[in-house]
Every structure is written in C-alpha cells, then in structure tokens.
Length: 333
Image 1 (cartoon, rainbow, N blue to C red):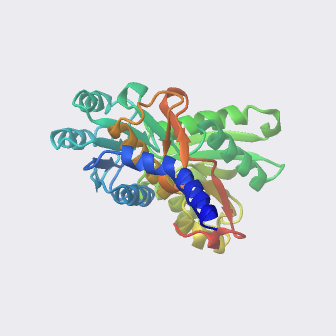
Image 2: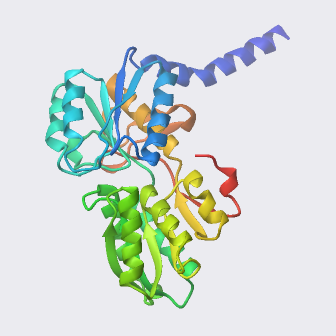
C-alpha cells in the first residue's frame, strides 16, 4: 500500500512539474502597465480588470493608465511616463496603428516589453499582439449573422465603427467587405461606413443620421461595444424598431435590456476579461525572458492554459460567442 502511495505521489508531482517550473520561470517584482484606448470605455474596463487579476495572480505589480478620449496621439504622453517609470511591460490597446509606434520603439529600446491587445500597432511597435479571435473570422461572421437576421430579401446596410484609425475596426471592416462580395450576399448593399469615435453620444447621433439618410436601411453592424449599445438605445425608441436589424460586438451586460425588449436579436463578442488576462500573461512571460515573441513560442497563461505564438507575433484568445435571448442570462460581463 505504501509503495502504491509512493507511485501515486510521484505521478502527481510529475503532472504538476511543468506548472511549477513555469511559475518559477516568471521573474519576481514585475511591473506591468495596461494602457487602454480610453480609460472610461466599459469594454476596456473589463479587459483591464482581467489583466489586473492575472497580474495579482502572478504576484506582480499592475496599474491602468490612459486617456479619456480615443484620439490618435492621446496615448503618447502615457507611454513616455511609463518609460520614465521603468515598467517591465506595457500592454496597450492602440488608438492608431502608427501614431504610437515611435514611442513604443523607444520603450523597447529601454528594455520594456510591449504587448498589444484588442487593437494592434504596426508590427515594429510590439513583440506580441493578443488578438480576440481571428480577424478574418470576426469580420466575416458579422456579415453572416446580419444576413441571417435580415433574411433572404436583403437590403441596404451600414457599418457604425469606432474611430477612422482604429486598427481592429478597419481590419474587421475589410473582411466584412470581402464577405459581402460572395454571391449569397448579392442582395446586401453596404451604403455607408459611419464613425462614432467610440463616444456614446456621437454614436447615438450617427445612428440617427444613418436612419434619416437611408430610409430603406435594413441593418447596421457596429463592431464596437460603445457603438452597438448607443445604436440600440436610439433604435429602441424609434419607429424603426423591429424594421432595422442591429448587430455587432457588445457585452452581454450592456446589451441585455435591448435583447429583452426586442430591439436586438443577436450579437457577438468574446470575454474581454479573458483577453486582458491572456495579454498580462504574455507580457509577464516576455518580461521574464521565457518567450521572445517569435512564432512557435509557447507559454502558460494561468487558467487559460498553454498558448502558442503564431505568425507575426499573434496570440489568439478564441472564437467569439453569439449572444441572443436563449443564452444571454448565462453571462455576466
């Protein structure tokens, strides 16, 4: 019996060994700073909280700093301050693919590791990009869902985006446009790409403008959590409710009332908290030297398990979830 216990303990120790070795590999006293697009964006808040939870789990020191607006250069001063503070890593959701790159390169030259998440920079601005899901998949899925919700009759559609320079938005929209070229979407006509600048009131007004300018509009895709909730709020009290389909990317907690009152039938998203969590682990591993960001690198990401760095330093969280009346109450974020 004692021999059996010894074998079992040895087996358990062996299964735990990789995790123990990994934990030991992370440096102590890491300082990791999250820099969101804007500090008060509900989606960004959830993502940053996920990142801080991971940082606490690792025993590192975390902080969140950022601008109140999503302007192209509004993050620059924060990057400069973080360089001065000698952070171990900066995790940034970029407002512009290029505006922050010279400053992030300066951070890298100072030995600070840079991870982008949610919205990427040009590749030279960072070592790793933690992507929500495959960008092509997100863009195409938005069109597929909208088409299903509108039905075979099709009609005019519009996109309500964030800022004109938002890397993630523009990439998704590019893939939406590619998907719309397929014969099965011949009856869907993209008439306008509008920009709400990730501002609630501007997105609300832009939705009003779309419905007035295009009286035959059948659907709006808003691949931004601020935009989709503002658009739904406008539509919920509009005579067009029930006639215009709104879908896009939103959080269940933001969209629950609009699903319940019939304004929105279905929308998609991943868990932004898990996105921040994964980005924090990527940053910690970079700063500890366990990975460099090259294709094929692997690292442990806490509860999310082992992750692999793909082409161009991309790490993918996973496919988005479709939320509707049947499942929305199962989620709380």
